[in-house]
Length: 453
Ligand code: SAM
Ligand code: SF4
Ligand code: F3S
Image (tube, rainbow, N blue to C red; front, side):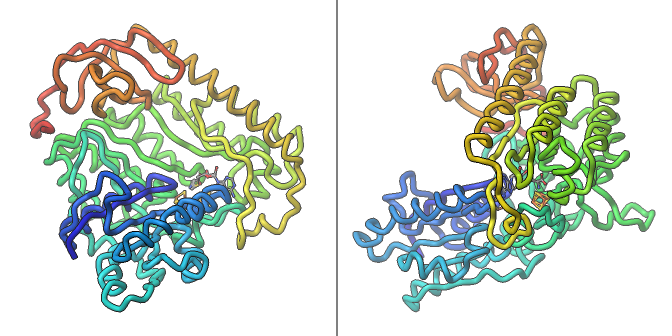
């Protein structure tokens, strides 16, 4: 097949990683090139998300817009992957008959073959099976686009929180083998990547044998120590971590490994023990507080961001106040706050959704306001400090400026005569509402690996 592809990614970083792998495959295996606009594509792929009802409905309304495109261009192939595909399967083709291919997160490596078969036979192809570990074995080596890259180290989730679809759409937790993870990161470092983000729904649940002689299965904390040894990698992030897997060994890793970014995204969901139990999260608010306090003890100033759900069935004003108090006591940074959305097939969907919508929205706003104020305070405290920043490219607002990310996950814009590469040092001069401004202090450090072109 020759022509152009267009991929649209919805949802979390795992979907973004998967979309990048699809792009690699379509380029290398199918000989396609990327289309700048959806209208110019011969193959359109939607990589979808079903975590909340709104996310899922957005997929169907955006798909609806492709109907006319398909009528004008009969050879156009439309493929739907990701979590909606995994959950709905052939029902997608029934609801949107102009869709040609439906594939799941675990069968994305079969996308080129499914597209080919649908073109040959003229009939829709659906494959949402779970051949688990096959996926990573069949994907081409990732191409680095920037100084920062994602590396998926886990698939699926076995936690079954009572509100969440992910274990059903992505399957059980499976860890990628140690050697594969290290080889992928090494390959990225050689291409000029300076910062990597290890990805998984519960990234700190990673467990796999490590050939270092003790015969014990390795854990996430140990994996981090090996990743930190890779030449060229200067900063390590991971997301999303789960409090029940946040071991003392992981806290020790934060004490010892300077390359670990001073930021952790650790979703708490609620500050009320009653709600946490109903959510089946497996920890108490005290346990969560203890993790954050121990982290701050070994890494003073580490920023902790979180995910919260408001309006979970049965959440009272007192439960919500406990959430606000936890967020305030722990000075939680910019966070993702969501109104509870009942998902079909999850246990919580059977509970009475009894909080009035205006109350839910009020709670959402109060929590968002609190975390925004706390994030702004952290920004203001950074003025005058020197920060090591990983380059992200030209600033979105001003083409004469460049944009990068600090260790604690802030975007900083700064002027520079030419594009600096990799990691640079910046003096923070001003805190704005959501970004920082700075001045370039150094040229990139020579870390032994080639700089990005
Ligand atoms: N695995 C991560 C964890 O356990 O925290 C997060 C995974 S989920 C893809 C991202 C966030 O979406 C969750 O942390 C939760 O706050 C939110 N979420 C998941 N299901 C939801 C639902 N039914 N309604 C509202 N928000 C939801
Ligand atoms: Fe969903 Fe819970 Fe798994 Fe996170 S840990 S993906 S919230 S089931
Ligand atoms: Fe959405 Fe699936 Fe990620 S439901 S948040 S794309 S794992």
